[in-house]
Length: 305
Image 1 (tube, one colour):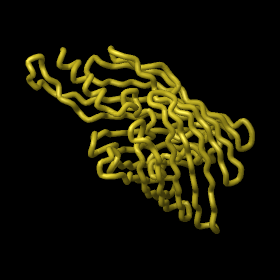
Image 2: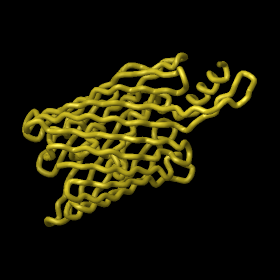
Image 3: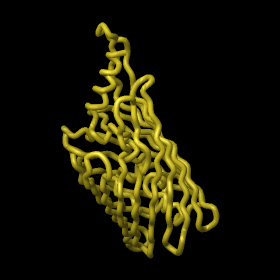
Image 4: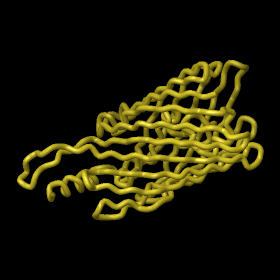
């Protein structure tokens, strides 16, 4: 038992500070967003709208969207896996309802007996289930909310749950959009030895769609986030997406982070293809060799009509 507790404490303290408080809730399974370095708050609603901005659901032209993704997060440093599924539907012209979930696994660690003998290993895991709603208040302006259940298990019999909420706004006028949100407002988590607050964020973002003739579109997106808990810090990102006939997509972005406090800086690239409402996307992170984010990638499949 003592060895197990020591292993748990070692597991927690050797993770980044944000990871001690279910930081995976700030990791979006949206492959498109990952290809644009996470600068997705003001983008139009797609499959993973609950994770980018729930308010965008009410402004979407799609009646129904659904999809899933698989991601390898920090594959060289921690070998984490992020799996997500999400979808939303429109009810009338003004109301959008969504449901989503994600599953995150950490790198396994060894478990030893009180005599020091290796008795096995354990893979910490976490998951969330979200339900969201959005309503168009006026033309081009909407509000969205998410309710989130979080469960984190760092060892056998060492588990805690939390409930959190997101509140988001979006305003669109022609090809320009503005957005703001407060995310992960909820109770603290405790695994038997201390309380840890959820990694709450204040977000603001803007996006612009530049159409060149009928075949080409370039979307620019910028986002800034402020961490309200833990080691407070500001992070931000900028992303760009080129679309050809709304069939083929090329994406890139840069995320400015803080290696000591939150997610370190990185660049991203992404590709996508869409036909008959079915979309396939891929994203890859470009980071320094010693960065834990190096070689992180995601693939996603979606459907909308």
